[in-house]
Image (tube, rainbow, N blue to C red):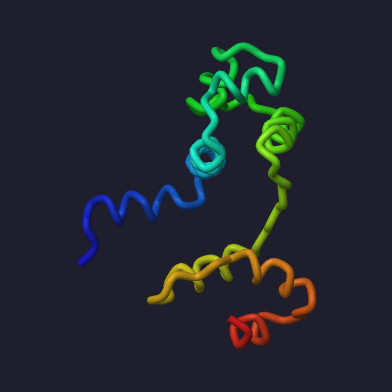
Length: 124
């Protein structure tokens, strides 16, 4: 039997606002980890971007109005390259159901070569 949180999470999976928050959280975690890896502080990133520390703090606190241009500037300052992966929902749902951890990065590139759902299921 599913727990209360599992049932509510399954209802939110396709909610655009929830998906936006999850994506922003993932981006912020990536930026925060990169700052740690490079031994940088928020003030260092602000200096590289030519913005205030308050701007960086607002960005990392989950600013919902962040632009792609701003993200690219941040990634460049952190010596990162942005890459977008888009997958059909049924593939993500299938892969999330697997017992082992699945890295989606490799799947996005190979999906363009796969033409029907049966081949996708076999490839996964």
